[in-house]
Structures are given as C-alpha cells and as structure tokens.
Length: 477
Image (cartoon, rainbow, N blue to C red):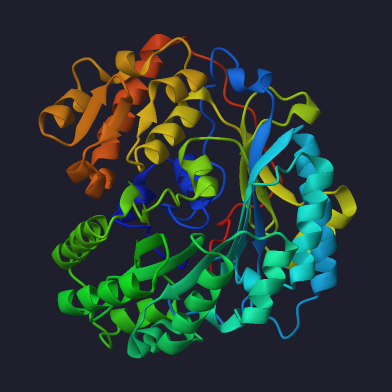
C-alpha cells in the first residue's frame, strides 16, 4: 500500500523502534509506520521461546523495488529507473529466497506475497521462477495463498492471465480512488475508468480473490465525496477491501503542497468520521471488519497478512524487506528481526557475494516479541488468544499480565477492551482508537514482565553496519 499510517495509527512513531519496525514490515495492508533501523538492545528472555522446537513454517514476502513513477504521497523503498535488469534481479531473488528458507530450516511455506514497488511490472516468468525456487527449498502446498500487488496501469487481461498461469491465485489492486481529480493529485498513472477495467478483468480471472485498496483523508476530500467513493467501490469490488488513511510523509510532493498551503490538510474529526462511515457501510454490505484497515466477506480474509498479525514466522526477500524468524541453520533458538539492504544494486551485490543481502539482524527479547504480538494482534477482531500468547510466554499468562488492576482493567470498564476465555481483544469502538490504547497496555506489559524475571545481559545484536530507514515496501502499485 502507499505511504499511509494504515488507518488511525499515526502515533505509532512514538513506540519502541523495534515495534515500529515490525509494523513497517507488513505488506498488503496493515502496516503501522516506517522502521528507523534496529531498536536498542533489550534484556533477553530468561528462557528460549518454544517456537524453535516446533516444525518450521513461514510466510514469504518478495519485494519488487521498481515503479514506473513515484506517486506524490509515497516515500517507500521504491525506485524509478530507465530499465530494470530483471534477469539479474530475478536471479538474486531466487538465491536469497533459497538461502533464507534454508537458514530458517523452513519445512513449509504457508503463503507468498509479491509486494513493492509495482510487482505487476515484473514478468510472469519471474514470478513463476520465484515460486519454483520456493517449492524447491521448502514445501509449498498446492492451495497456498499467492498474492501479487498490481497497479491498474499494468494489468491487461493477458498479463493477468500470465500471472495466474505462473501460480498467482490472489490479486491486490491499488485502486486508491475512483475519482480522476483525486488520482491526479495522488500522482497515479491510471484513471478511474482504467481502475474499473482492471478490477473487472481481475475478478474474471481471480473470482473471490481480488482485493482493492482505497485511500481516504485526501487533502480537500469531503465527507460526502468519501461516501460517494465508498458506494462506487461497493459496486465494483470483489470480497476484500483495504482502506488506508493517507499520511502526509516528509519529503513527498503531496506533503510539500500541503505545507505550502496549496492544498488543505484534513482535520482529525473529519478523518475519524470518514473511518466510522466506512466501517458502518462495509459491515452493512456484509463485510467482516477483521483488521483495523481490512474488510472481507465470504471468508476472503488475507491469510498472508494474518500471519503478520498473528505473530507467525515470516521471511522477507528483496531490497529493504523485513523478516521475523528463527535462524535454525545457524543454531539459533530465538526469533530474529531481519532487514535486507535497501538499494537494489547494493543488495544484488551482497546476494551474489554471500547468498543473501541481510543488512541488519537483531535477536528479539521476549519483551519485544510480546510487544509485537500485542500491538499487531489487537489490530484484528480476534485479538490475542490465550494459546498464541502462551506460545511466546508459557510462564506468564495473558490473564496474569492484563487481568489484575491496571490500564487493561480500566479500558475494559470503559468499553474499549475485552479479556475473556477467548483472549484479549478490542471492542468495536476500541478497534477505531487502538493507537490511543496501546501505550498504556505496553507499559503494563513492560512492568509485568520486568517484575516476573531477573535482570539479564543485553540482547545480542548483530548489524550489517549502516543505520537508516528500512521498509518492506508495500506498495507503489
């Protein structure tokens, strides 16, 4: 998705840097912000996380870094070049995927997501080659979800058919708006008519498995205009919609226009009203609001994105991609946060030299893993289940951390949270204001975990050298 804060989550930049990095890694809908590199060392867990003993499964994210042009709101890790060397990039994607899957001793890949950038600019042959390499390094079940992000300007029917033949079975189309004036302001290549045509073609080839992205909170966008966009989207869409609140990122053309007064900045009350309107309209149309920014009906949830929100292992391949997995091939027994080198040419040199382009990696402490589980799990309507929590915290239960006196109890009494036999989750009202709830919950977690364990040594950190922003790149589509 474009440079957005993923719904009402803009204040995430105040959270611990490793937690922001985890959020930034989310492709295809649901990221929380950008990652300013590895976070500070945190005391490690007093005991290894039990996932190292279980059969290794992982989701796989594959980053295509190139776009034909940069949108006015985008500051993702994407590149516009006269001619990309697709053969060289393909060879490096194959090699890095094989290297990292073997490093994690991954037995089975649960899903694959091609994000970017604009991965629909890649040839179907590249997509097929990557999937073949993945299947050679680990088991890729026949029914595994394989998603490709697509720009309406690079989705002819014949091209989409090529992707389907290559193994793609789900499409995520960056519509962003169904109004030509808004699309021009956003710097999009396509028109509203082209977006409609692309979605209709995709639905023919990927029935029930075509998702569209829409932006709201655009400069000058009114409540009425947003309601019209929603109605148009409902007439067009399949069974999955992702809605993102536009964030004006520093360094982008759109942010500069707003700062200069050429375009008006939307007020927070209007943004909240737009989000509430969207939730109400979509739920009334039969969609389940299963994650802060994502809606599905007829069971068409994104299983790949659920792997992020449910704290499953995932491996990031390609320039700037993020990953969270246990490097069993190196004797690792704890989950690591990994970021690949950002710039494509530098990344390719590293892959050619050592088999992968990992730029930095850090062992995640138990606290950091639980912070990620809490912040990402609460984005979903299911929340954090007792079973999932116990996987990362076998000795300190969810009830022990959040069931006593403290912020969680107050938030339950106020109607924002629920803690019951299912686990900890937001209410309908709480999901809309999750960003304001999380700081207190994270502090309560930190206090509980600090009281439950002795002091340890600083967490091991291994870094490839440079510090700076790293994004898994979830879209320029």
